[in-house]
Length: 352
Image (cartoon, rainbow, N blue to C red):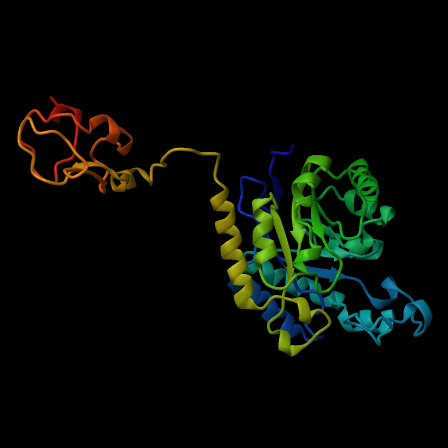
């Protein structure tokens, strides 16, 4: 099992580090650069460690056809009534915004990077010197793209939505064979939003053992519960879509976090990581002072020398400075070697 941390732009990712929290802007900028910058600022203020974009155009994603398989007619989809082309026109982040967004993110202490969807996007992002790459779930079987990204030699994060074990094996082999040394797989459910019941985060430790790499979670559920729970199973990266306000609308706003939620995720995921600790029994250093508040045996009535101990003059009470309570039956009937006042912690020296 992997124990070596991955260095992404100076930040370590691994089981011995707090989870890396990625805020995914996606199309929540609503085609406003100023709003995009506000999202960057809000993500940093909430404590996100990284900010991710998506790098594509409608033409690099699909064809401009408004019927058949190019039209979304599934009434359960958030994007029903759109053609794929029009959806990507609405959702894409203009490429000439990337440099300014990345610069602002860096200035605010975040790691800026993106998801490329074709070779032209990889070339563009290489010119911007991104520190790592992300492959989206819908591209996790695009072996040529994975090889192209892996060939950069930079850390590679791959979402695993929909992928079978066989497909993931092929993907991982392709990435490593093309030069990827630092690989992170994200457990992902490709529904929008996803339900906790359909998230199956018990897969996380199994995936870590199977592929011997860092494992995280790309979380499309509402709230922070699933993400925080994933930390207890070994998730070292958490990615969530992020917006300023869901009510403002946008292609991904429905299942995106707002600033207060992101801040809570940053705090609670680190607390969950801290709570893992080590396998430990017995009092911790912090608990040792509390030992005195256990029950122990105390004299609860004045006793004259030579008088026997009974359940009326000896009781198990707090604090814990007397004999352990397990000795109650042993001391009953024993006689005291001197006068003993009420409130005295019972010890062996008091017995004749």
